[in-house]
Length: 252
Ligand code: SF4
Ligand code: FES
Image 1 (cartoon, rainbow, N blue to C red):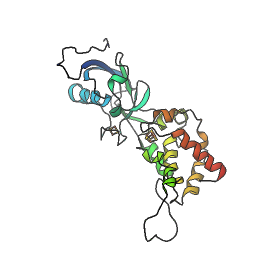
Image 2: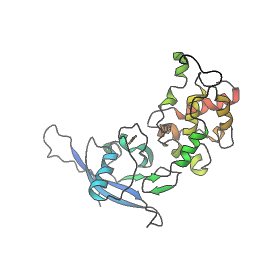
Image 3: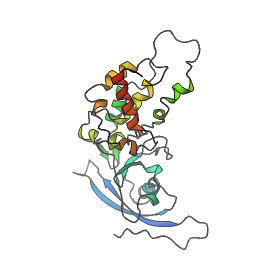
Image 4: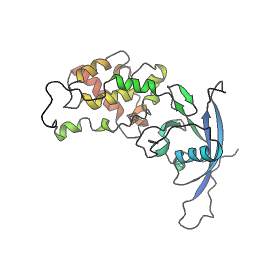
């Protein structure tokens, strides 16, 4: 099947042009398949359509068995991270026109987590690593009688890592995680960073001890894949470096 972009030139003035593309999707149904395989689907999309829209079109009009996760469709819930043309992205934030639609667009599940069906992976190891770093405020002493105040400067120390939507694009783009599923992974360190540097929190020492583990921050090889993959633009590698520094200097 050819995969050229065939723009519809007969559209009315002002209409968003349409074109045809091929999505080459990794399919795997553990009930019938021994191994994953690729299948091609031809769809007509608008210039404003995202990869998620193309997947919906395939599921709704061509093959209802195609399985993938999505919820908000607006880059907020983090459920539709997948490998699109070999790069981790959110399908709902990726325009088809931006991923070289002149060739088949490959769509695969994120790497390093067990595939359950098609583009759906088992996220449990990822969420377990997140839970392990205690992603909640830890306080000691008596309950305050008013809200816990914080200066703008103190709030800014962890502002970047509050933006995480737990999509796993960072962790599953990390070669260390691919080779060693025990590694906490970038997201867990981002999740810990968000509280370690929060002036209202008293659990930093405990979290740092957890991340000082042989599967903790020291496994990071600073490849920057995580930072490149993050759809929220979080400086993931920088956050990991800050946690490493906090461990070395005992300052946080
Ligand atoms: S740090 Fe970025 S890539 Fe990683 S889980 Fe959070 S939002 Fe996704
Ligand atoms: S569907 Fe929610 S982030 Fe894409």
